[in-house]
Length: 143
Image 1 (cartoon, rainbow, N blue to C red):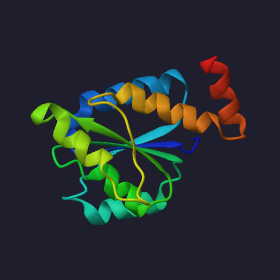
Image 2: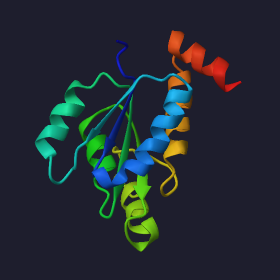
Image 3: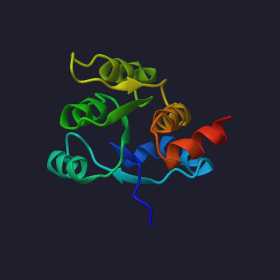
Image 4: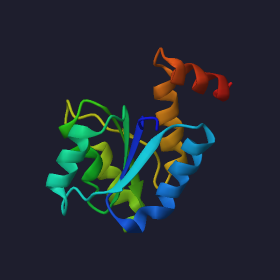
């Protein structure tokens, strides 16, 4: 089996509708990926262990409410982290602002509220910049 190049991490099982959007796009481009549910608050140790061992080059972190997951991921790894805010409360503005307001040195690319598809598309564009077979294949499919 091919190692995953994208890791999808959701803070809650209730985010599955957004996870499904991410997975749909990644499958469309044949991008190897994995998915786990790990809360930055409830599963901190497991999240640290997962981030340390995942071979993925890009992490898509989906979170609502306080939306700490993307920022915590970015603080624990040097890999690209894409945050997807979830519209759980306040129309998702609480999550959006939590994700985009990261301190200097802890970058999180952020897409629109509930926009799992754009997170997947951004991950694909990032991966396509790598000089390898996957990148070439992705560029060909994008054109």
